[in-house]
Image 1 (cartoon, rainbow, N blue to C red):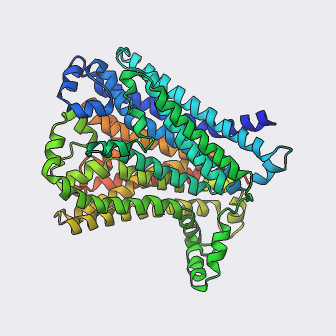
Image 2: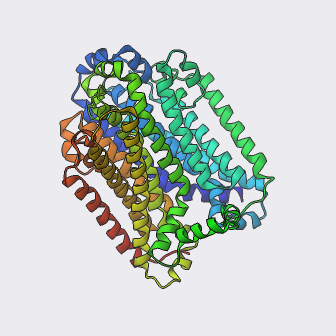
Image 3: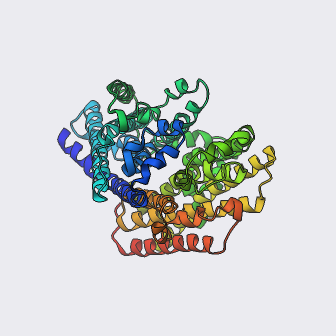
Length: 551
């Protein structure tokens, strides 16, 4: 019975994990392609970098072109993807069964809660380990494919460190989900912890005495010991794994003692809120009836946790960055000028001496896309989630066609992406006004429109994947794959002009290439973004109405 549930859990989660790994492989290939033209100039390129930066990313001139690619993979995009996969699996492994209403089926079989916990946890651990092994293999093959030696970098050691950190994040989500039964809560809090760790590990070491505080955050240990150069620091790795194990034990201790739920983890809170007549009326307006407003309202209600974390967090961060610029404006431009063009290309050659460049490099190039992607992809996968939760029959029982239900779910994706875009726009505008930065408000609004368009495309890609398969994990994998590969194409195209034609298929190209805070909106940008989203939605609806639904 242990083996059966274990294998079933692996089968259920494997497809989306493999899509994520495949995305990393393609990013590695694009990275090697972009940097391959440097050849022997790679050594002088490293010599141009500030010493603190080469120490921060853990590479030197001996690493060559492969080191440039691997520094990007191991210090940014790779850990985000593998840790994101671990968090997704950890949050869904047990709490997902309760949210989907399938926990009662699992617990009626002759197995204890502890055995169920072990089976699901081992399945998540197995996939996380396989993901990291496949990522290591992809990095190695991409280097060898371009004829570059891998002797100057220790890919295996860096992979071990990333794996340990990813397992800790996954264990955190797994324990939180097991203890609460709330999948969205576990996923949202764990993702917020991941993003916070990323910023803390990168920024705190730059402050006097801040490095000791940075050690609190798991992300620091991805490169704290420079494993690409120095090999595995087993002390760090074993401490990370010990903390992950302790989190799992705590999750188990709470899980075996609490009351489990089946498909209604959030209902007690709603019931308490509905006791208040004023709140009940607001909820009724939000939820609506069997109408377009009803399904869109239902989708927004389902996304409230993600919107609170992503939209609220982005609003606070973008507003705060205005005041931050005033604190660092005296030296941040010279600081950025110390980097060679090939590094600054990754943030669109942002001019950090100006507030527009500061916002572009610090928020719009990475952080904002992550926030809108998480919210929009989650909303895009919700249509398939109705089948997974066996609630689609209820929706289709109302006087609406399949196509109407699907299109209303598509409108919900646009609404969710629009909320994050509006929060970003409001945050930048507030930061601009409070700090007296003098940025153009029409350009800030133009930036918000393009953020909305980027979220629409990513959410539509997830919608298409879920609509044609009925699998929310496939939907999330497709949306994430488009996000990761699209970002890589645009970032590496700034390094190597040969990738520019390919970058035109990336939604990021139309979102960020023309620096909207500086230049405003070009007519073709929203046309391409929202046009591509509409096409993806239409294909998804067409596929949805033609296949047999589950549930």
